[in-house]
Length: 305
Image 1 (cartoon, one colour):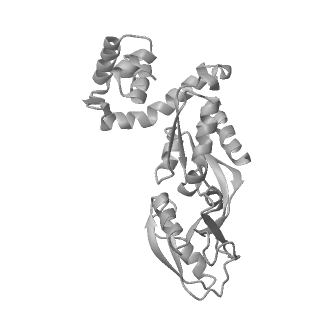
Image 2 (tube, rainbow, N blue to C red):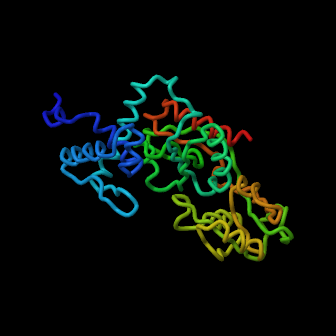
Image 3 (cartoon, rainbow, N blue to C red):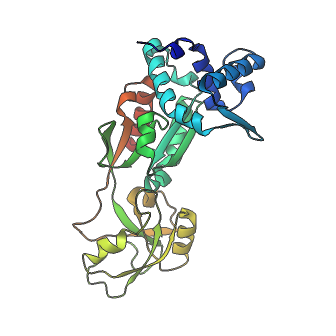
């Protein structure tokens, strides 16, 4: 049975709340909903009364969500998205006219090699789209499930909940990047390497946050290493590699995108080398939305080139 409290709620207010969550500004919300700013303010007051919470606090940057609103947002937005999908015919999704935001979480190694091309593809097909690319992190699974992140790209397969759908889209490999002119440039690393290798490690969220992976992999074949620097800043690591004999273990996709100032060293065959397959991940309940199918096709296009 529908509760008396819910019966009192004007469902049109939820459309206002959804837009306010997206833009954090009453003026912009009024423009998007083709109404006046005072009307939006009145609707917001009714929402505050209904939820018994301020929902938004005014700041110099616009409207800031309260803790209560963040809780509402996590459940409300996916429900409204599903409702839109049911009520709006699929044919009404016009990519060329789409002016919303796409949120994509990508593993750091992969992001550094595909983000520019992916953005180019998205903007070519939807010139008004806003693209938000973030690190794949510890909360990405929850955000994919709720719909706050549209799509994720990471190495495949991952041990994830059945609430998300995974699909393999490409295969990658790993190499050691070095400066052009390095004694090991364009060679296959040998397991009888005598001198310890000096390494630079890119810290990638939810991948190697706490420990560099390459030293353990190389140690399994008797190659000693010393991690000289770890950083989340790719350009800093590449600058160090370019000016020294430090080696940078990274994705081959990323290595191939670098300038001719860099060469790379092939890893020997190692049984414990991480899998290089790449997959996309989508919240299972959102997968068949036209927007998601469009994003899926754009990811596949990135890796076809």
